[in-house]
Length: 258
Image (tube, rainbow, N blue to C red):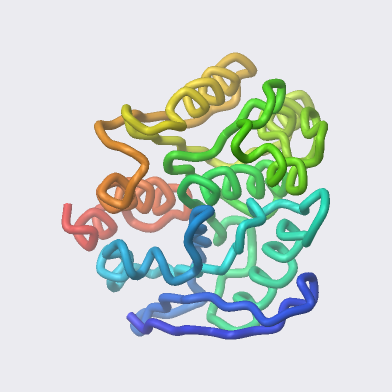
């Protein structure tokens, strides 16, 4: 695999941005692309520094793009930058212009942890025409019918606005809207640790998807909101995406060490 650090100019943010990218060195492209998102306190280097992601995808016919999401929750902020448009227009746009990417829905998947778990679900539900699958580890899958946590209310108001329920930020509303419209949604997978502080949020969103009849995978495992948990379960997410992308499962399992 080739490991690449790329700096590029974001027209949406009007500033320089960065991403790390893993690109197959063998095989015939174009290759499907996995957009892998970081959490609130980290940046685009963290997946490579804290997990064996490069080892897990060794020789798989898959490009992995790890972009900087800043602290914007991968959505267009109420007061601030349009991080949702940045992801769609600049990150995907740059990746597909620069690397041997399969530039269609069947070749794009997305996932992430915590803030990135929310971001992957929000982007996939807001743009179901772009992604074939999405996963969330320990996602910040809030029910906006309830108030923001007091310790972060000011920050959340700047990001989501004072009344995010029913808006383009609201996972519950997005899922319900597309279910009613019979939109072809991406394959969805959600997992969380039993001792994670976001476990009840994930259980509630899982229950909502079940209630409205949106197919998805849901799993809980021992663990907390930390890199031990995410390192252990990113391989399962890769197998989930491999199936949706049409990557041969036997080969994927073998190369993940299964």
